[in-house]
Image 1: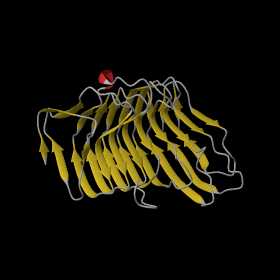
Image 2: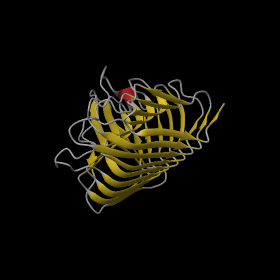
Image 3: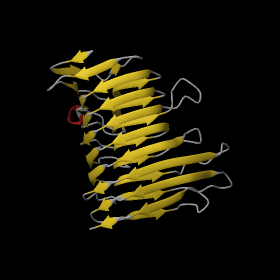
Image 4: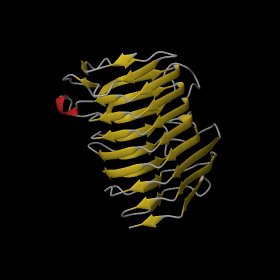
Length: 266
């Protein structure tokens, strides 16, 4: 399907189908009409397989939203999808996140798998540029997340499970740039992760550049095992951070190792 011109839709959003290929032509965009809700998904990839999405330009129209609170307005929502590639997406002015990745809402243990996002640009979003709540084989290549803030956490990227059902396997963030993110450039918060199912995580960040985010460059927080098992590794290699380095707070020593290598600050 080819999308052309400047389209306007309501907050019902659009559902993509399995084995679909959607391309936005040069200058094409989707912008929300005026609304009064804290919850929407402009494009949904829910329990679908083999979707290709090229150059979507999505505007959440936060200036046209009459809601006074909430944080669940998403540009692209990926729930339990598999084998999907999104190239050059732009998500602006969303009430919540530019891109949101989580488990299926319908299938037990149906987490998102093999999702690749290339050259994402998020700006003006209230909650996050991207939230990864759960997933395996999630890759972001060369994203730019900037001017994020309005409701907490306010990060460029927030890796934050809702509960013990989440998985974080082979999460790769390659050459991300963050700027002016109120809650931090990249945040990892595992406060709700430990539980009866043992977890092993693999999160790799390479070449992160933060050019100045009020909430810090890289924050890892909140893990208290309380007898449960969460292990694995979280790494950041070759970062360039303008003001601050790693902030490691409330992190159980029995949890995943957190390593920063070859950092340059200032």
